[in-house]
Length: 281
Image 1 (cartoon, one colour):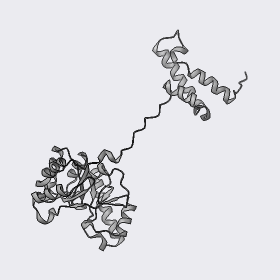
Image 2 (cartoon, helix red, strand yellow):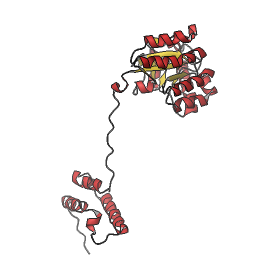
Image 3 (tube, rainbow, N blue to C red):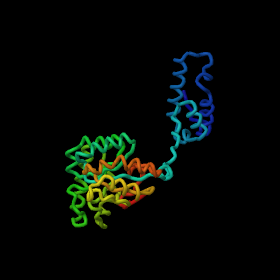
Image 4 (spheres, rainbow, N blue to C red):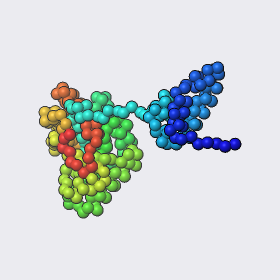
């Protein structure tokens, strides 16, 4: 017995014709589900065996998708636009986690607000469950160095070590490596920003400094945060101080009264550029 190969063009026509039939139409007198399943299964096998130049034919591919022989392409999701967060401000807290941090997380949860926490390596290792709570509630966990040293006074190797040690501690607790960092005291130079870029990390500076660590006054912390904030700003605070946590509810309520929404950095700047310094969106 001899078998003859059809030209690809003829095979394409025959395949398109076959695919234009539904399984029920192909076997009108064999209505059982088992038979229809067998027909569909055979059609899938036949389609899979076709040369790629036939399967890529738009007509044939369209019929195959309509019959469920191949998956239809997933609908494209519109990219997030800046206007989706046009009224956002980013709450950021440094130096933790510490004892007051869990109370702060409870307040933010009750208020349905998110924030960003720049942690040190030792504190991250001491309180891994608090870091897990942060990520579980939608907060951003960032890197604040291993020893809270002024990075501009360190060698490149020391800077890299500070960053990697903290990233390792965060990843150990949460399973995710940070992609935001804030150098202690905001001290940075080309070495620091270059290493941050190499490590895939954006740098968070700030537009509003509450000086909460200095005066330890909840009312003043709230007043500065609310009065000085505008859309897109980054607000600096420290969750190691209970007086800062005392101000949290006032800050969230005050910002919302101004038409601003307190969010995490990942929410406000979802595609931050590694090595770039952000004081606002």
